[in-house]
Image (tube, rainbow, N blue to C red; front, side, top):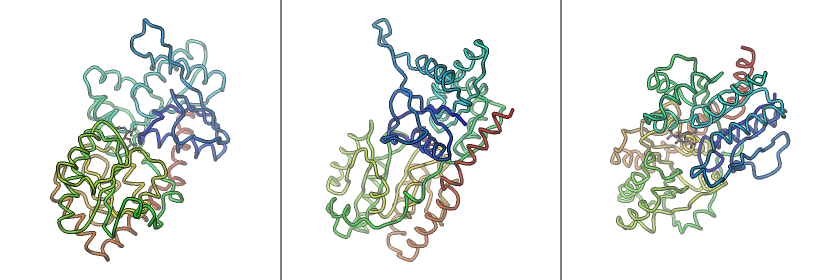
Length: 375
Ligand code: GMT
């Protein structure tokens, strides 16, 4: 198959899923054409069967704001035409699904046809898409997609109810390469961050409000009263300065380690003990899955698709949004009970391997493409 993939290329779960999917498809002999404004982060070396088409954005002075959605449409059309694509697969509805819809209409007018599949990831549905000005367009682009997938049952239900849509949506959960994300000790990292036998809590995010990163810091504050511990924060974003300020205010500046954006997460995760995810909204929680694959139990909130991933009292614990006391209590319980910890750790790894392994999920996308193309 020849597939065009459009995603946000920088830091973020939807771009990671799209890129890993493209790499997996290419390894199975499919030709994959990424269409975006920059090379996706994980395509940092030559990979057979993968091509990249950069969307050029015109900076004519009249255009005070970039015309990305239109430039993307033009590039999709060009690639579909000259590379003979069978299908375009867009990740994150805004504005990608609208661009694909427009490309499809232009191609039709030119006497051709190109089908497109939209994968819904999260805030395209639960936050940004709900803005009154975007809502009709998001609804329209979902309804007009030839196929729609969602990364959790939660997100599928939200889409159908929030947008009053009557359409078949296929749930295809996110996936992980469990040969890359796997358990393994990493004592070097502990030394590097000045760890002297403390337990390490870890959290990865883009430091946006929905992630509630300050809650992770407050959880550490409570855990530290019972167990010597530190918190490693990976990623960057608008809330980082506020989090650094909070760590100083709580006198935790030596116990909260801000690593910023990082590649090679599995090495870092392997130096840590427990993953915390205090999100306010989370359609799936890919970073929790990465941690689970490395054998880390997860303590999270019960929002969105997280209960589809984290099994309460088996692979971790879930609590209400903002219930810092309870999340801290769960962390302490696991860190103080070695036997329980190792059962949860093993369960987490097994859940990742048995349910979310790349080789189980990627064929579902291929089957879905085949179904859409046969209609
Ligand atoms: O929706 C977002 O906030 C962005 C998106 C991303 O690009 O990082 O995150 C969403 O997609 C991920 C991959 O499918 C999911 O693991 C995240 O749970 C989801 N984020 C939210 O729902 C907040």
